Length: 168
Ligand code: S3P
Image (cartoon, rainbow, N blue to C red; front, top):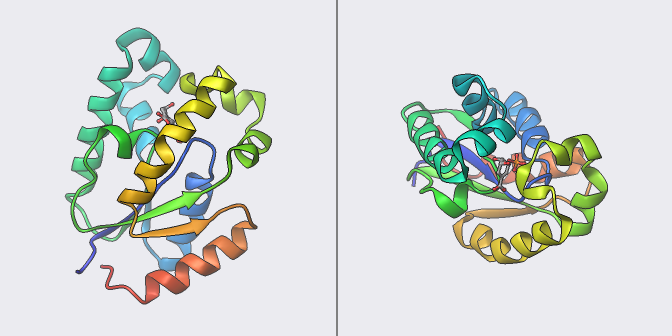
């Protein structure tokens, strides 16, 4: 299989955006963040979209956004944590799961970061969501990287793996 884009998936706060930016730079690819694109297009924050239009509407925006991104090649795409649950990831994507333990995510996400994520307001609900979703992330992934380690190590593992694949 020749992959056209690299798609990073994983739970909220696992580091998809930070990993993706470095990875894109190392591989000389464009970096795209689905949540950022949606916020810019809608001129609203994710929280406002959830509050004003509802989660279902947000999920439709995610599917539309990833479909549009897939019209181009050679990108590293960071997705929101719910995208692989509710949307179909376009074929010819090399899907990488950034795997992190829930307690690591809790330590990483500041109050400000949690407040930007409507599905993280309630910690026990977020944990239940995490437990529900991890097997779906694993099923969808071509490759999993243990992200409970330094960002340098994560990127090292990923670059090694990706350079062995046929990615445009
Ligand atoms: C969500 C994850 C968020 C954002 C939205 C919903 C989810 O993105 O898309 O708040 O359902 O897991 P991050 O994974 O970047 O936090």
